[in-house]
Image (cartoon, rainbow, N blue to C red; front, side, top):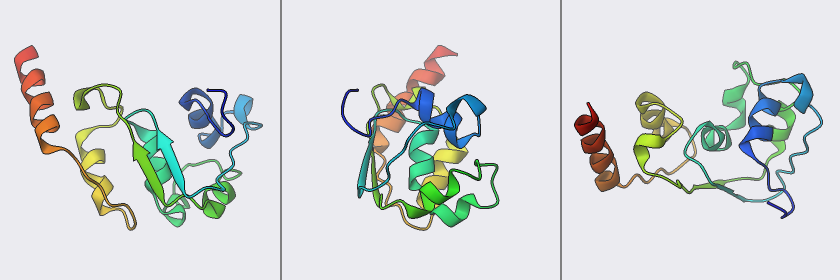
Length: 121
């Protein structure tokens, strides 16, 4: 957490959602790779081609940061199994439909997660 440009989702998400307490959070997108330790919307935001954010409710003061970003690869490292992802199945299925990302999903992990969810109830 002490590395330069290491941000918590607790700071990053409210910033792009225009929360007034987070307008001063600095994001430096001057790198080609982002490593995301979570399985959620932060990864989706980094994977989206910035012009696709124009019609969304993403904070207008953040759009230039995303548009100037040099990030072309977002490595998503899930600390837990897929059923704990912070996005829903349709959002996960939509990732490969985005213009730029190559999405590799371990089908065995998804099947194991589905089985666990079915067993729970």
